[in-house]
Image (cartoon, rainbow, N blue to C red; front, side):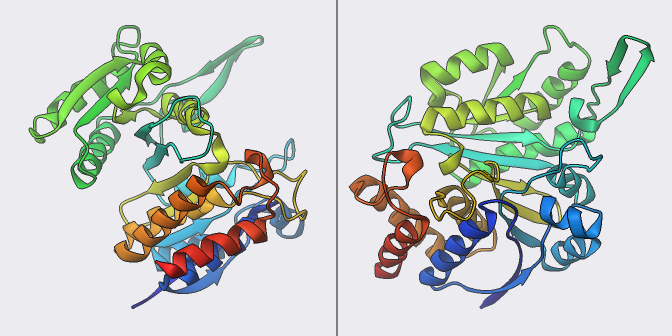
Length: 335
């Protein structure tokens, strides 16, 4: 079976890590027809927009996209591509598995959690105003509908991935109405999943627990701002954003992405680490039902890092992007 998937190579090192990921997917045997569309800072210079309409049309048509890191021109009034994609396609669930890789010196060995972040509202809804000179107000928007679907997604994910606990992260002791609504909905949804243990933790306590015993939290479900912060904290536990995958899931579309930046300072030098986008592509394969090639790549990534012979410079090695990709492709092809 062949899949038609939208590819957004991105800016900076984006095209390099995207090409590497395509090669690894090809080595796995999965059949993909790519619809390539550009978005981001480079497009803005030519088109006057960071996200041309045909990009959204392609994702809506194909239902699935793989996206490299994208930059947004600073101070020129352009809206973030990532934010626009989430809003236009209603990609309500940001999913960030955080897992230690062998041979990478993490802060903590054996970390294996997943952060499920509500992606469309909270303080990121962009509802801001100046009440009067010198006084700005940002409105925190929390709706029952969004709380319900993100909690349902987290429990469904836990059930699908054989996880034992879902932990809701909140600050309902202070924000009794907004975060209180999330907590109320979480408790109702939890009752529908008796095989999965529900847990509740305040966001500051969660940050502490993540650096003491992250695995106790298991699957974290939370609001947009808390999830954004905790996701990067989680990446720091296992070696950084260069190896952590990410996905934005909606009812009808899904965008899988590298969560790190476009790193323009090393663009074109052939030294970028493509692991994050490759692992995001693995999530994509699971999403489209290509379990066998997904598992083949997962095994190869784990084995390559375990051996430690081929590693890019960000993790203390000397391999180029191409050398790392060549080694991984050989392992994937070998099964």
